[in-house]
Length: 395
Image (cartoon, rainbow, N blue to C red; front, side):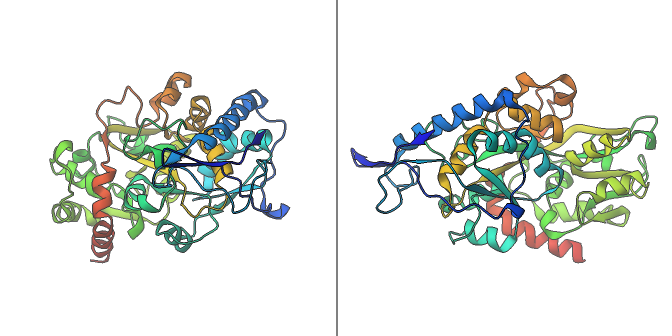
């Protein structure tokens, strides 16, 4: 499939296709794809690539953000080739992305997806407008709001994730909704366990240690959880009252067991070191997949949008735009949800999920008492949140 390279001006709007390529990474650094896997979705991916190629020719913006300028002096056509450098946090979520998205994308386009575990220095450099090697980065939606001026808008007509606000979804794709919930081994509370966050903080009614985030950068939804437990209504959470949050967390600090990496949640629960854990719902799914009987409470669970964003300085925009469109396919998102128990960004994906998968994702239509993070409000408090949680952990 060929993308015509043109740059024209129509009524003051610059329109351009994207042609820049990078040399492929050495074979040792590129994941070997399974060329025989899931051929049934290749047609969908190929159609997505064609659509993005066509959209790139018509994507226009008066400020040059929605469209990307052609390489200087280039006027020939070029096929998609080379690679996408994808930065996320590795582990089972990254593996699920290959199974649900990347393998078929590579088989259909020839574009390899080279994954790297995010380097904070590189990510922060690119979020603030500097150069770097990443074409796409896994971030929280609050970071998309905070650094929007340095992020690349998707081409006009790209299928956008409708599970996140319309004022920001043109800067994000591949959204998955993480549920910050409480989970425990069902056998720990044979007569019924905690449901609300007030229950989580009630160590008399539900005795035992609480697994809780123990590294500054993983403050997650700790403040929202504490405030809900203290009786704050979801509509009144923001701006977050950090002093009240700290005071509530202090009430059970002696009963907390702190984890510094998410997989530790599974170990703490399985060993009985902690009776209940607060953390990403995917860790409870992984523990269940290992054979443990786990109960997760979705009552007041915090729905936290994680997403993928493209820095303006991304080297391979044509490739990443094509991958973004392919990842919007609801069937592929449903497959990803089944593997990870993370909710989809495209809500049409629920039409392709079995009931068990629906029951295990936070933003399932049946979960009517969840609390969505206000990512825009959190963006205004990001630095304050990090500093406050770092201080609280050290006290």
